[in-house]
Image (spheres, rainbow, N blue to C red):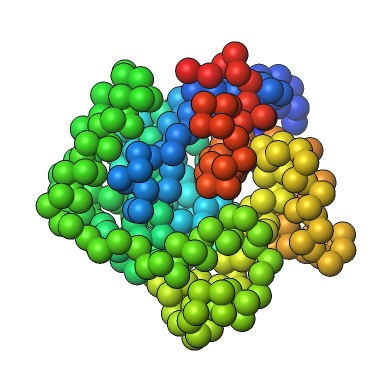
Length: 333
């Protein structure tokens, strides 16, 4: 998972020295210089269906190819501009070339890291759905979308969605465009709000994803069978699978330096021992914890940082105007 040259140097196996050049972020940076997205919470009236908004504008060295992966707990709408994108999906390898016109993809949740490669500079507008977002969009059931990527325009039949965005505009303008269009859609469709049990389960997985199903059911005055049914509908996975993935996402974020420092020790205590940590991180990310910490993972870093931003906002760990502690305040837009 690193930026590399597409062709090796003529004299041998050594990659061109530009291969090690970092991804150059135009929408934010971590304190160590790694590229980050601009990411914000959606407006309150959109929050029942949307969980987060992010925009990424990144450059790479000439001839560079970015290899990495993503792991998200909810479906996402991604508007792509530039670059050639390849994804290893449940339906097999997929290749997308959005070009200057742009294109929109609908990503289902991932059960484990999805390998992604990007060739060339790119811009991405990412809209992460909430626990009721897929149902509001009349998208396929979450269980049918695990590890899959679909053409959003073909899925919705409502025209070329990417054409609504001015890719030369600011990320805030991109958010305003999406918010305006989504409000129009909600006004026309008037979807039901998310299930209260699904919302409560989401809150618990963000705060402390090692609770028992029995305790959660009792606290919410429902049966464990009801919790199983609601969570499967909202996430496409069992409650146990969702919590297991949430623990791995939190620990991976800490290993990559995009979690609050004081939380890393607590995140590790969610596992029985070090071998348990290694086994779980390898299961979800195909890496050991040490590899995850030491290797370059620019795409995964972008992905995990967005979820941690959503998490600390939901848990009210920072003031609304305060940047996350891992972000470089001088690089904020």
